[in-house]
Image (tube, rainbow, N blue to C red; front, side, top):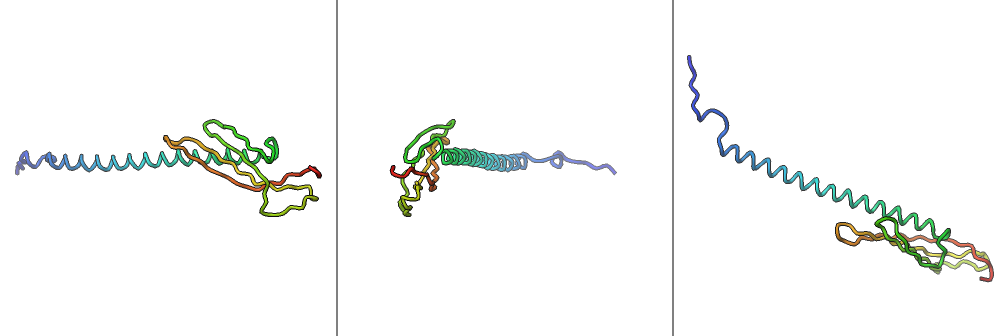
Length: 133
């Protein structure tokens, strides 16, 4: 018995191939778009993490090499920061204690994909004061 195959039975039709290529193209496009979004989110998260580290570093310097009651600006790479401190008046600290409370605000700004971004951190610090000053 000899089996005869016609040309119609061999392989895929042109329409089937076009449909398959269209599906592959759509899936690939969606996957690349998702990957691009994930990479952008990763870069944004990295920038916020670095900016947070810069802000924490500036906060730690206030009262050390950045005096209380002053505004100081600086930069760390692509990140600009401003540290401001002023007397904290929400609570009353007796003058005789020799301690003054300050509120300290650090703002860090940077550019991300053409947009200006900023984070802000705030804390309260204590400074020893000489009595009579």
